Image (cartoon, rainbow, N blue to C red; front, top):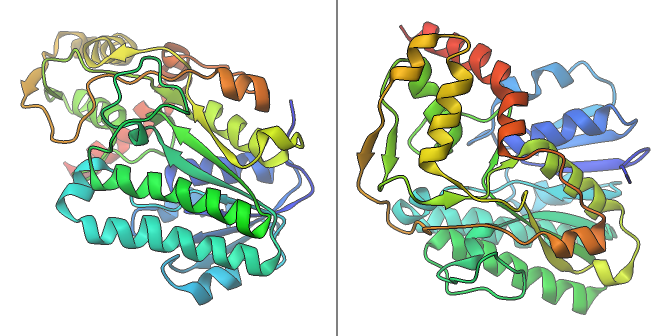
Amino acid sequence: MRIITGKKVLVTGGAGFIGSNLIEKLLQQNNYIRCLDNFSTGKRENIAEFLSNKSFELLEGDIRDIDTCRLAVKDIDIVLHQAALGSVPRSINDPITTNDVNVGGFLNMLVAARDAGVKRLVYAASSSTYGDSEVMPKIEERIGKPLSPYAITKYVDELYADVFAKLYGMELIGLRYFNVFGPKQDPDGAYAAVIPKFVSSLIKKQQPVINGDGSFSRDFTYIANVVQANELAATVENKAAINTVYNVAYGERTSLNQLVALLKELLSEFDETIADIEVIYGPERKGDVPHSMASIEKARKLLGYSPEYDVAQGLKAAIHWYWNSLSERCSQKI
């Protein structure tokens, strides 16, 4: 398995969930890491353990500022661009800020990387790009119309990357993440991802709320699979594998009802009363895609991607972190 080692790597959004997991792995592999984050959604606690590491540098700033982007890419070999404003509901409530960060900020990073001579930039794309496509599993070359401002921004990023690769000879790879979960994922706020949100409710002995009847399904993807994909994309040398996009997932569907049942089973090992907590079913959310499952054949073939964790294995690997971290948060708020 190819890994990143002995490189100077910029991780934008490095204090976020995915970014901080990338940094942790890359620091273990003899890399110098520069983290760029404005802490609008990233957490200082996610990178606190790295601050004393001489191979780690924190640059506090915003990708919407081109001068900050130019400073961030100075002397960098590889950019792993994770910075973005996630969440479909957030983009529906505030499309302007979502566009400013996800499109304007991405364009700034492309220009800064181009001007600095950074050849390889791997960026976080999104499964939301598939929009209203009913093709199952999702295949990279067959997308539908976007269903939210967030989805539009992530598709525009792919278009910009394609143009920059052709015009300026850059090496750009997009990774369409499918519902990533794992340690350091924030359970708080209106736009929290579903797994930490469900876990937090169950630990608090509150009934988790499912939007819809629970039949909607997702290709939940453990963070270690995402880290693997980033490293493979950053190091691949086959020209046919560069300047394109890949699904990053496990390749299986799990319904929300199945997910809650699995979480209750795992958490009841810590507190058996959690097994009896009932679900509340609420209205469906605007912009939600009913079902999502990825084909990962393209990533397997061209990148050598081989995800190690399905949803059950990923939850088992993360459950102690979820319990310890979220139990502590819950007790602090009482």
